[in-house]
Length: 445
Image (cartoon, rainbow, N blue to C red; front, side):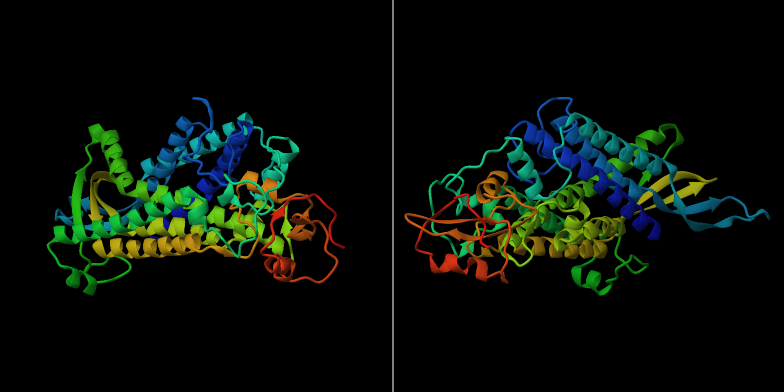
C-alpha cells in the first residue's frame, strides 16, 4: 500500500504540473479568440478552435484519456502475487508464498502517458500567445485590457456577474449571489459529484449482494484496510503469454471503468475551488491588505484552503479506490499466469464516505452567498474590467465620490488612513437608496 500511495502522489504531482501549463495555455488560446469569459475554465471541456490545436477538442480528449490511464497504472503497478513452485528440492511440492511485486508494463504505460501529457502541454506553450503565467484574475484582466482585447464598459460599478444583461446605475445590495447562482458550470460539477457519491454507494450494495452477505454483517467487519475477515467479491482474468497485450488492455479497461469517473469528477472539482479562490481574491479589495495584482502562482494555490484540500484529496481518494478494488496474481517462474480482481464493499463504503465529505464541503461553499455591497465577479473577466476603474499593484474598493444625480464606487490606489474591512464600504450601506455608476477619479488621501 505504501508503494501504491507513493505512485499516486507521483502521478498527482506530475499531472498537476502539466495541467497547470495546459490550463494557462488554454486560457491564452481562448483569449486570443476573444472567447475567454472567466479566469477559470475546465481545460478538458473548454476547447480552442482548430483540429490540431494542442488546446482543441481532440487534444483535450487525449489528455482526459491519458489522465485516466495515469491513475489506472498506479493501481495496476503493484500486485500481491502468489509464487508457485513445483518442487522444494527434495521432490516434495513446495507451498506457494505471497510476494508484493511491481509489474513492468503499467510502469512503462505510466511513464508514456505522463510524457505524452507533457508534450501536449509544451505544444500548447508554443502555439499560444501567453500574456501572463499568473493564475490571478487581476493579472489576466489587466493584460486583456492593456491589449484592448477586453474593453471596460462605464456605468456598471454596481453590476456584478449576475447582472450582465442589465445596464445603467444600480443601488448597492447587502447580499451577493453565490457561485451556484453566478456560474452554471458549478451546478453541473456539483451534480456530477453527488451522482458519483450515490453510484459509489450503490456499487458497494451490489458487491455485498453478490457476496451473499447482508449489510449488518458487513458493517460489523469494518476495517480501513482489507483483511481476512473482509467481505470480498473476486473474479479472475487469465493471462496467456500469446495474448498478453490483449489481457493488459482488458485490465486497463476494467480499471478505467471505475477509475475514470473518479478522475474526471476530481478534475472538474477544480472549477469550484478556483472560482471560490478568484472571488476571495477580489473581495480582499475591501480588506486592510487590499487586492494585489501580481501574485506567485504557488502562493495563490497554497494560500487557498479549498485548493490545498483538493490537492491532498486527489492522491488519497485514488489510493482508497485501490483499496476498494485490489489486484492479486498468480505466477509461475516469475511470470504472471492470472490476475484476480477483488472488490471489498467496506472499503467501497469508506471511499463513499470520503466522496460524501468532499461533495458536502463543495456544495456548502458553492451555495453560500457573499455579504456586503461589493459586486460579485467570480473571476468573470468583463465584470472585473467594469468594476476596476484604476489599476495599481494594490487596490481597495469602495465609495469614491458623491454628487448628483449619481454616487460613484471604484478602486483606490492609495489609502493613508487606518481602515477596516467594513468601514470602507459602510457608507454604501448608509446610501443604499442611491444609485451608483463608475467614474474614474482621484484616490482618497
